Length: 85
Image (cartoon, rainbow, N blue to C red):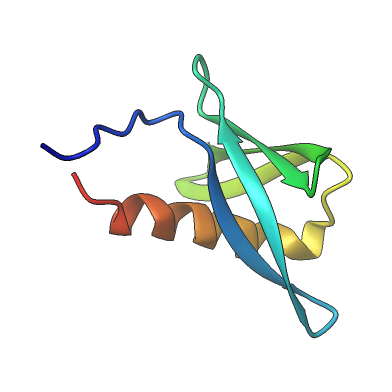
C-alpha cells in the first residue's frame, strides 16, 4: 500500500536567483490556499493566487521579490500537476 499524501504536506521547489538554482521549502496552509516559503529555516513570506480581470496572478507578502513570483507560482503549479494521486 502506498503512502497517502495530504494536500498540506511540505514540498521543495527550485527557483533561479541571479544565475543560481536555489531550493525553497513550500508549506501549504491547511485552511487557505496560501503557501509559506522558507529559505533554509527562515520564512521569506507567503504566496497565493488571486483572480484579477479573468486572469490568475500570484501575490506575495514578506521578503519575496516580485521578479520571483512567476517562477514560484509555476513551480507550485507543476508540483500539483505532477503529484501522483
